[in-house]
Amino acid sequence: MDLFVASVFCIVYLGMALGGLPLLQLDRTGIALLGAIAMVAGGALRIDQARSAVHLPTLLLLFSFMVISAQMRLGGFYDEVARRIARQRWSDGTMLAVWIVVVAAMSAVFGNDIVCLAATPILIDALRRRGSAPLPFLIALACAANVGSAATLVGNPQNILIGESLHLSFGGYLRTAWPPVLGGLLLTWLLLRPRLRRAERVAVADPAADFDRWQSAKGGLVVAVVGALFLFSDLPRDVVALAGAGVLLSSRKLHSRQMLGLVDWNLLVLFIGLFVVNAALQQSGLPQRALQQLMAWGIPLQHHAVWLTLGFVLSNLVSNVPAVMLLMPSTPAGLGPGLALATTFAGNLFLVGSIANLIVADAAQHRGLQLGWREHARTGVPLALCTLVLTLWLA
Image (cartoon, rainbow, N blue to C red; front, side, top):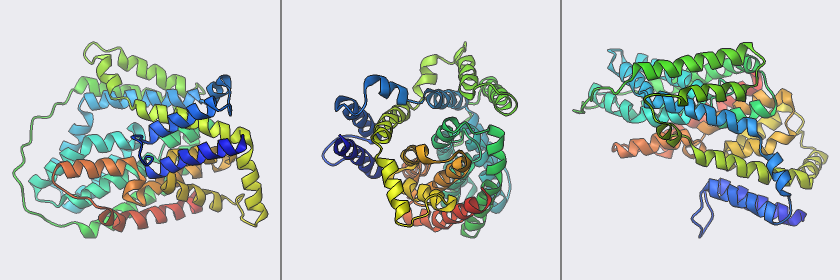
């Protein structure tokens, strides 16, 4: 049975690394789901064990913030923010700094992927009207979204998983995270400021903003209440967030079909599949034996710098959510904040290291711009390595 579990696990994580499997029309979600099915059908886990392996609070919190982000997106909030910033008569250097801070703040609350998806097309068009070269700002968008999402336990999926699994304090994590996050944002600006340049103005239509003040204000109020309860009450975070999502779904204007259509169901299924696959691996005892063997060979995995660096490297090999799920059972609670920071900052290393990066690159391509891996790496590699050092030093 150990051989079967190890084989299924290796195939699943190979698929996580490659983004698919040769000859099969599968993405990461499909691979994780089939892996979970194989573990149950092959007898590695019983149905009740597979059900227990799925961490419901993490899924509920993730779903709830997807609904909250959908509210803000349908209300035109992200579009309006991007337009207002781009219309200001600031210098490019000032605009870059403001853009980095605003994107980071929105990503910390609503998630980096959603912010990048909504803001990229509007930013490109606005920069072309200004006569500013878009590529440095696009790299800033992706990098600031990744760095900013590390600031809270709800900024990205892996932080939600770590916070719920290790029962981390929302306010305590915020106090730990803000120094390396601020350092990362400052470094983003310093790396990109010399690359700003003027470009030819392009006549691009500026359509009237489809901005619904009431829907955006309603979403903002729910976020404020949920955030306050996270900070100042002992209520379960998943229940608080779910209640907030329920309030937003009770709308006279926005149909629930619209809201739920923006929920990333694929990501939720990916989580479920990986929960089951990793539970089967843990039950086999293979990870524990592997860790003991590595320590016997003199590798100091108990040292926090080694463990967080391992999380950083794995995040670039198999993506950050699978890396966190793999490391989580052996991660002490004291290393939870550092693991959240390291695995999130790892997304800036390469263009393929974060879904947010790929969203920006894809949206740029649809606007006739090429954001290649070399262009991204000039900023992403030093930024990722420096923020890892900050994490090891400060977290």
